[in-house]
Amino acid sequence: MPPTVTVVAAATTTIQSARKVAPSDAAFRYLGAAPGPWANDKRFWVASGDLAQHLKVTFKTNAPRVDLFMTEFNTRFEIRVDGKTAPGMPVRFGTTGTPRVVQLEFPAGSRERVIDVYGLLMPFGGVWVPDGYTVTQPTELDALPVIAFAPGDSYTQGTGAATPRQTYAGWAADALGYEGWSDGVGSTGWLTTGGNSPAQRVQSTAAKLSHKPDIIVTAMGFNDAGGDLALVAASYDATIAQLKAAWPTAKLATLGPWTPRGTTTAALTAMKQTLQARAAANDVAFIDVEGIITPENAAQYTGSDNTHPTAAGHRYLGEQISIRMKAMGL
Image (tube, rainbow, N blue to C red; front, side, top):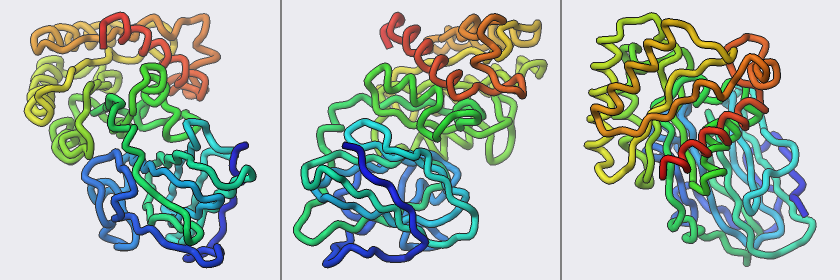
């Protein structure tokens, strides 16, 4: 049976004779960029000191109740138990910075379960369990290949997705049987400069992943359509070089630009051709996403802004991308 999920405004647990497991404990498996103490509040861990990154925390426990220690920071996350999404997901918090305790109570009582929490803007403060119960790291996940979708834009960040995990990238990872992680920032692309430039993001996120990625998929280009293609090519080449230097054994792939209305434009076609050519030159697999969304299915899979996927669109894109990846041996 699924757990009962209750969120309360509190900084401690109501479990009698509780044992606290701190976020620094080896019981937790983190998938994210250099997870560690949050500068704003050392009680919590975040990815690479930056709340705006996706972070996954997984642990195994036999406790009949588990309390997660979190805090409000425009936080969004999904909890899964033994691979199944818990009721009432996603959990969304406000921006007050108030501590929150998320109570998971299991009607079936005590048995070993794997719990994972995947979120965005998600300070994680560890868990409480009743004394006498265990919290351990699920080492069986070490056998799963890791896929990273990075760097990406708002699709990868999750605009329109039901939860931060249920993006096209998350659905693709699930369909492939991989453990997935994403780095997406809205309104960015190969031509973005400054702190969100592709090279800077690789340096601060993908290059610092806590577990070695087996596959890295870049996912930008839509926001660059109509821009300087020579600059796109140079940025792409530099980013791929950085990814290869950070993870020399990882397979690399590149998604073509999105076509949310099911039709393309001269600018999008030129962008696709440029990315396709640079992928070939860098020995990177190219995954063409044109034609996944069509004029016939766009009303179902693209939102009212005519740009971002619906929740159903994220799932459809992810499943279709996974089919293409399998056919390419990725």
